[in-house]
Image 1: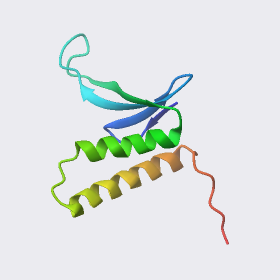
Image 2: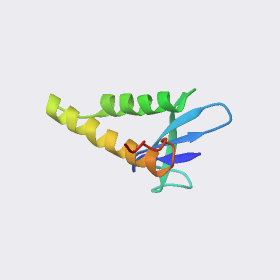
Image 3: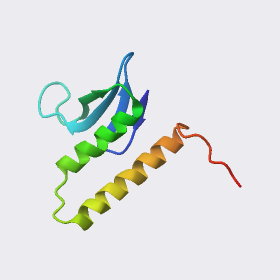
Image 4: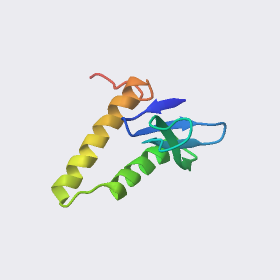
Amino acid sequence: MKLQINQDWRITTDSHNFILEKSRVAGKGEHRGEIVWSQESFYSTFESALEGLIRHETLLCQAESVIELKSLLSRLSEQIDACVKGAGLCPPTKKE
């Protein structure tokens, strides 16, 4: 599985883990100047990988106020929702 969350983050899997990956531009080597993916952390469940993504983004953000942090988390939540729903990973909602 390769589930692109946004331009900076994606979640992939191997036979044992959900892997949170961050994009970066290679500074040297044969892929210099290209976007490459670095494995940031490994998780046993999809839910914990999403929690890890939120944790990483929160720790890396440059927010200087609660409003800026809330905006970041809201935007990230929307990106995750769109990605998960688009991949068919959410159960359909019941219509009443």
